[in-house]
Structures are given as structure tokens and as C-alpha cells.
Image 1 (cartoon, one colour):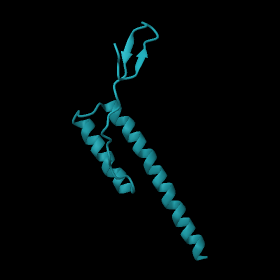
Image 2 (image 1 turned 180 degrees about the horizontal axis):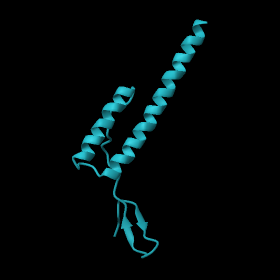
Image 3 (image 1 turned 45 degrees about the vertical axis):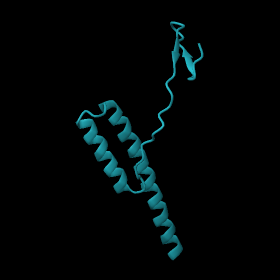
Image 4 (image 1 turned 30 degrees about the vertical axis):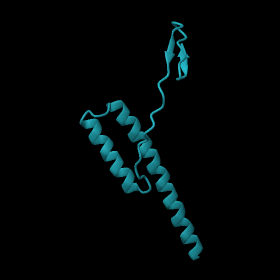
Length: 88
């Protein structure tokens, strides 16, 4: 029997399990500014609070968004410092 999807063999039972194909539709949102990240965090919070997503998933997403926010803050500070140095 031919299977068009890759398979995985369970190390414990030895059974063959199909690996489902990757989802084709990707989630897109704008995360260029801290305001964008803040809006996305609020959305994740509301979805978690409304039980549309699992709280564990919401926690992971918020953690990732906090990381994005730190990168944006660092980048903004770097630009400001460079601007100040160039004015001297």
C-alpha cells in the first residue's frame, strides 16, 4: 500500500504512524512596531480567555511576542544612539 505522506515508526510499539501534511495556510500579522506586538498580544489574550486557544498555547505565543518586542526595542535604541552619535 503506497502512502503519499511520510511516515514515522513509533519507537515503543513499532507501529507505523502517518505524519500529516503541513498546513498550507500561514498566519500573517504585522509585527513591525511595539504597537503591532501589543495588539497581537491582546488578541492572543482574548483568544485564550475565550477558550479559542489553549492557555498553554497562548502562554507560548505571548512569550514569543515578548521576544519580538525586545528585539524591536533594541533595534530602536540602536537607531537612536546612532542618530545621536552622527549629530556630534
